[in-house]
Length: 172
Image 1 (spheres, rainbow, N blue to C red):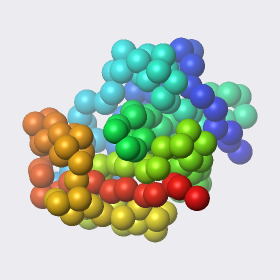
Image 2 (cartoon, rainbow, N blue to C red):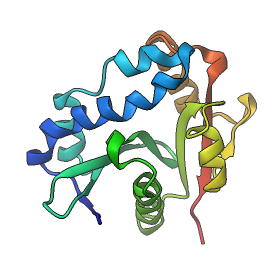
Image 3 (cartoon, helix red, strand yellow):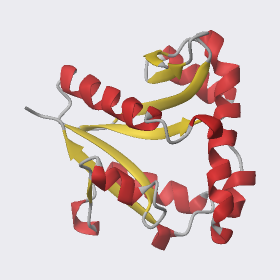
Image 4 (spheres, helix red, strand yellow):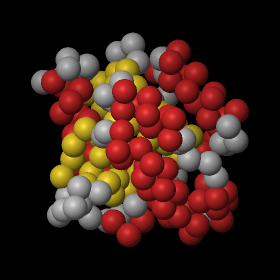
């Protein structure tokens, strides 16, 4: 069992470990092994998300984080920067619940869309988000902010052909 709550400063040191654990899922895809060994968001990044109240955690019965999601506000969307679930907790609906929490939060805040960038062909990325109701954005549909985020990902080592932006409407 788990619950979702706003992240706090006591959670921060556990979140990079969760992201590194979640990234182990990429080991089954040779062209993406580097992600399993790559950098994760720093504790300082998480501190900033906590201070901005833009990070939530899924916690176990002992109130220990087992997953997290962090976001930033864009011009007309709440953008998911990262969603990660500890490897041993994956497949239990935690990521889905974190995303649904963000969709409800965006709706409560009057933010019309939730956006994200992800891998096109990894089963637990774009295909998964499509099952949750997100739609792929074509090049002509990208806001300047999403173009910039995708460009930053390329500069960080991601292949542009592998990445895509997605959005879901949360208006009633």
